[in-house]
Length: 144
Image (cartoon, rainbow, N blue to C red; front, side):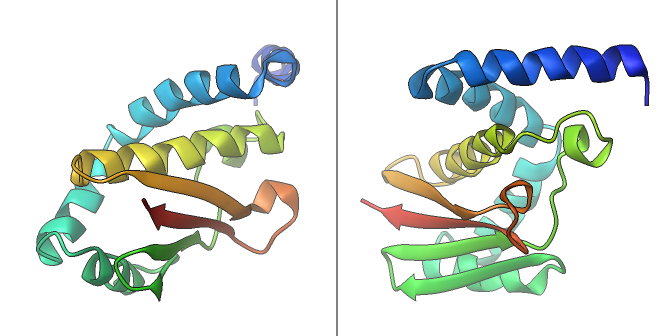
């Protein structure tokens, strides 16, 4: 790891910490959107087609992918999406350790859902993340 880049990201983490919640959401919305457009969105679009646009079947199909877990908590309304490990390269490469970065993951999930189901409104809540000490990164997804 390049020390200069590592030090730059320490400043980035401090800058993010100084932002308000809505500013962090706006920043990480763009970051998460750009990240999933590099291939992750295509994966979820494939699941969407397999599930024929049905949310319950979509989250059940997630279970066919190693490292992912989907759960229908309440049919057509509440779901759980969990990741066995953090796949963010900023984390895996050791550049960022701040749990504030998990907002990027929340925003990326929200972006994927809004892209696949533009007619629906979603709320995505982080239930736990690896950077916050949990065993997995998990989101509770509510269709409003």
